[in-house]
Each structure stands twice: as C-alpha cells, then as structure tokens.
Image 1 (cartoon, protein in one colour):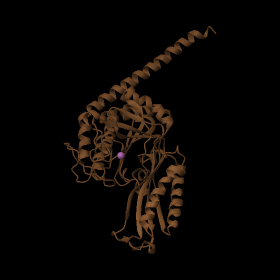
Image 2 (tube, rainbow, N blue to C red; image 1 turned 180 degrees about the vertical axis):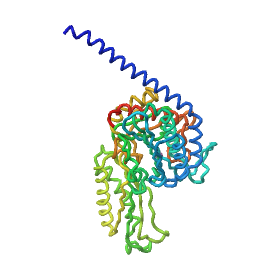
Image 3 (cartoon, protein in one colour; image 1 turned 30 degrees about the vertical axis):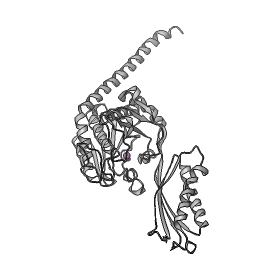
Image 4 (spheres, rainbow, N blue to C red; image 1 turned 135 degrees about the horizontal axis):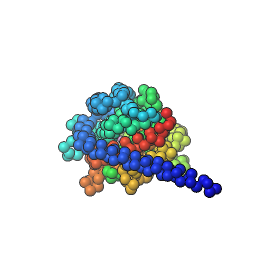
Length: 431
Ligand code: NI
C-alpha cells in the first residue's frame, strides 16, 4: 500500500492544478464577457430603443430582419441566411476550436396594441407596439452575437442564432414562426446539440434569471364553435331553436370539463374569449359563434379535452335540437425544459448573473412556440427579469403600458454568452 502514496501526491497536485486552471479560465472568461458586455451598454440601449420605435407585426418583420442581418454581416458571421420562415434570420458563428453546435433563439415580432407609455422611445407605428419585450430579445441576441464574435478564439464549435418571426402568430400552425423555421431547415446544416432562449418577465426584477426544469409553459390550442338553430320571432321562441340559450348552456357546460371531467391535479384552462350572435332585440338568431383557447401541460390532457368538448357540445346542442361545429386547432406545445440541460446550465447562469439572482419560477399557462424547437433538440427556455418595482416597471406583457428595465439587456447578454460558451466547452468532444 505504502509505495502508492508518493504517486498519489503528484496526481493530486495535477488534479488541483487542473481544477485551479479551470477556475482561472472560468474567471477570466467571466471577466472577459462582463467587460465586453459593459462596453456594449450604450449600443444595447440604442438598439433596443430603435427596435421599440419601429415595431412590426408577426410575419411583417422586414425592417427588424434587415437590422439583424446587417449587424450579423458586420460582425463577420460565417453564414447569414435571410427570409427563413418569411422574415427569419439564421446566423452561424464558427469558433476557432473544433466542437459541436449550440443554438440561441430570439423572437422579433410586436403586437397590435397602441402604446400608452410616455417615453422618448415610444412606438412610431400607430397601433403597433413591442408589448411583449421581443425588442429586448432581439437586442440581447445581437449583443450575444457581438460578444461571441470577439471571442472566436475561445469557442469550441459554433453558435447558431435563430432570429425568429411570428412568435405571436402561433395559433395557425403553418404560420407559426418556430414551426415554419424548423420546416425551412433552421435546425439543420448544422444541427445544434441544444437550443437556448429566454423571455423577458416583468414579474422578476431586472438582474434576475428565472428557470424551471421539465414542463414550464402550457400548450395553447385555439377553437371555434358554431351553434346552429332556427330563427324565429322573439315572441314565438317555441317556433325556433334559440341559439343564444344553447350557447349559454354550452359555455357553462364546457367549464365543467375542467372541474368535473379532468383529474384535479392536471392544470387546465378552457377560456371562451369571444361570443357573437344575433342582430336585433326581437329576433332569435339561428347562429351563434364562440371562440377560445385551451391550455394544458400534457398531451394526454390535450387530446382528452378536445374529445370532451365534442361530447359536451353534442350533448347540449342535441338536447335543444340544435347543431354544432367545432374547429379545434392545435397550436404550440408544452415548453419542456430538458432537466439535464437545465442542471448542467445552472452553474453558468449563477456565475454570470450572481448566485442569488438565479431563481426557480412556477409553471406558466402562457404559451411559447419555443416548445417546437425543444421537440427537435433539447431546449432550455429561461425568464429574463425585466421589471423594476421602484421605477414602476411592472406592467404585464400584452398590455399598452408594458416596458422593460433596460438593465436586463446586459444581464441577458452576459448570461446567454456564458451559458453558450460553457455548453460548448462541456460538449467539446461531442462533435
Ligand atoms: Ni412574447
């Protein structure tokens, strides 16, 4: 036994040296990324404000895509593909060292909302506003592209940037930005080993990064219901089939799917968002139209709900002699963050954002078409804290007073750059 001891010492010393070297390297890199990001401060704010002033609706991101493509060209990207999924841009940055590919996704579209904020960078396009922070996402994506373009010598492999259009237009599956990006080869040639991205979150203060392993955001389906009856004079309801009464019964009955037909522990939302019918006080209309959305966290529940909706509508309408049509459209899937990828990335997030600034967040019923990428390669979709209670930046996304604390831009760039480089280091041998 004894003769082995002297041999262990050099080994242990070597191990300690390697460990120390790793830390020094990590520290050096953290400092390098922090410095490069800090130098971009003014540019990040200017880019975000420019994009904010010029918001473009889903599938109309012409100017935004041009800004993105021009910047990637300026940064010396090895490949810049434009017009992917209409206005998407896919850029590839090759590192100096061999290794695999990792992807970062940023969405670019705005919403049909009139901005109510009185800020110098207020939207200049009437009725259109970056009310979901995609201007910040695009800005951070470009910031990461710039920081990494200056660190090519350190990159083991390549980083692929997906600037995606039409995230908000995701209900029509063929129109959905992410799905169309995948269909048009954004995740091929080369195929990434994993994909990362994040969404601004006003509930988290700027500086904070939120994460959740496993199912994190709900699926979102859309539906249209038409109820058909028979028109009659309002004073002779027995001569018609009153679609208003039938529709009211349907709305109530459909709510019992969640409360009485699905396992209590299965998160489900069934919302009727619109109801239209009738033309005059004294006419019983022969048709009422309803539309809404279904949110779930499992494919089984999703399939079950569609079936239960058909059963419920068939039962209620037949009781009154009415008929129904249900057009159920599957939209985005559940965002599932790969647990192993999340666990492997958390140390990078903590190093970049600060140990206490990386927090686990609850599941959300809000949907994201990032979910589609996660079905092709392991994905991790984070929350980028963008709120600032002290400054009153607390408005929810999709409202006219939404804004972000621009301090989130630097945090986003640092965190994303660190996560991507660390991922490539960890998988350097995988190519
Ligand atoms: Ni959004």
